[in-house]
Length: 353
Image: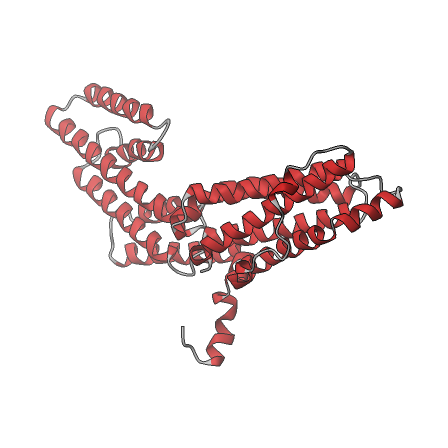
């Protein structure tokens, strides 16, 4: 975007992905507030009957969702649910007006909503649930005028359109949260690894705090994957492979912390440092390098291969002592970290937005 320098400086807090990620809740709250104001002004300005349903729909579609990938999916599901439920509701209103049998209407509504409830468990459940809710919004208990049902349907569709429009205003992409959370997790991995090879305690509060933060990040990253896949067209298989590299890294670090030489044995520690000097440096450099690339978006550093390639026969060497086992785990960690770097490099054109 070719903007004048003063405009770039003025809009930097809004255009910078990291700042939008840091202030996502505030941006989301402001966006929803402005969206609700727009629905109120539009429906009251046009004097649309039952205009409050446009505002209700706005809240349903984007009120609890801040990521752009989720909002688009939710809006489509809301539209399908509205059209299905409104059609059924209008049919119920018509049959009530024609036959005039309230008990028949109640029975039909119960059967229809039971059918929707059956399909509300499993794939497409949100559409089925919204269809059932919309039946009552449009038809009431079958005694609503047809005109009211039509107007409420129109208001709901207006709310969907406005919600989609406001989702494009300063979109909060799930890929931002994925990138920065992954970057933070990789920095924590580097910090834990530095503690392990530096002889620091692996049982004190600081070390356990880092591990707990990593486990929480794993859960959060997993929950973001479906939205990230929709937003930037990275397959879930590829995202899962990256997640698997991170999980293996964390697991290996936990094992290394429990199998390293006793820090009080200075001779064993010195031997370990000498034997694995290049691997120690490579692992830390790559972990921090990946974190910087994810945060800044400059993925060129990911194209740099490992300065010290781990030989395949090194991973197959026999284990005769605890130190040999520690060395083998370190080599496996180096291979895993480099594999993660390659995955991030190959997908960078997608997540670098």
